[in-house]
Image (cartoon, rainbow, N blue to C red):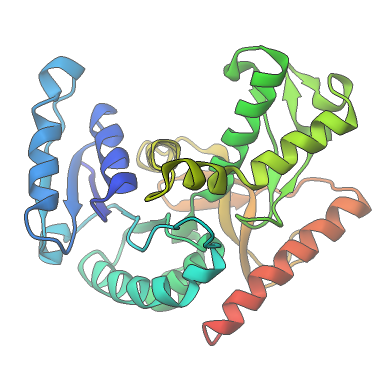
Amino acid sequence: MPKITVIGAGNVGAECAKKLAEKNLGEIVLLDIVEGLPQGKALDMQQSGPVCGFDSSIRGTNDYKDTAGSDLVVITSGLARKPGMSRDDLLQKNADIIRSVVSQAATQSPNAVLLMVANPLDAMTYLAWKVSTFPARRVLGMAPLLDAARMATFIAMELKVSRKAVNAMVLGTHGDLMVPIPRLSTVNSKPLTQLLSKEKIDAIINRTANGGAEIVNFLKTGSAYYAPGDCAAYMAEAIIKDKKETILTCAYVDGKYELKDIYIGVPAVLGKGGVEEVVELELTAEEKARLKKSAESIRENIGKLGY
């Protein structure tokens, strides 16, 4: 039976763990440094099993030894953004947390795939790769799928169609310099550029880039967690079930897209080995330039971490 550890029992981690349990993907371990928090949430989740129709084992713990032998480790640990705080503001604070978490998780589960959720996502994923010393394909990040889900939601709201009919394409960093590709985004297989004016598309792109901040401003004391947690669980399912599904992922790129030695949002084939292939799309010169600019912002953060 597969074993999945979720580190961080806050809102994102708890939502992810609950969704993993509902998918009956295997044994779920929820870890947090706060005594009683993961144990209480895990017990609460298990008690929802009879009405939600799942039999997954969910265990809460404060001890990394209980995570030993995990096939997949989802890392949601870190500080959440507050109003007025950018993802970059979190860089140094969350870097210290991630170094500790990844080191302990990798020691207990040396053959695991690491799925990063902590912000700033691209830099934290690169840091996790360096700290774990895992092959790059076994370290990946969640954010591009979330960005695409947000963009798809706003498109569906504008066109008044089912969200299932929308396929949004978003590359690059998780932040203001993300790279939405409207011409490769579709609604019922029709290009978005044929359905909406440039002005409306630009408005959707702007709202997508600020999607997280919009929620933070509403919540005041927290940040988004339903969509991030569910996106992480979706990717986890593709990995655990070896689906070979192409999913927008923060993946290691070393040559494709004219980029070297960087973690950035791209389409990638996910399976039991983690990232099994980075899919290279044919981009226009303008799109390549935007992706390069996005990569430069990631490199700046990586440089601040000493790499």
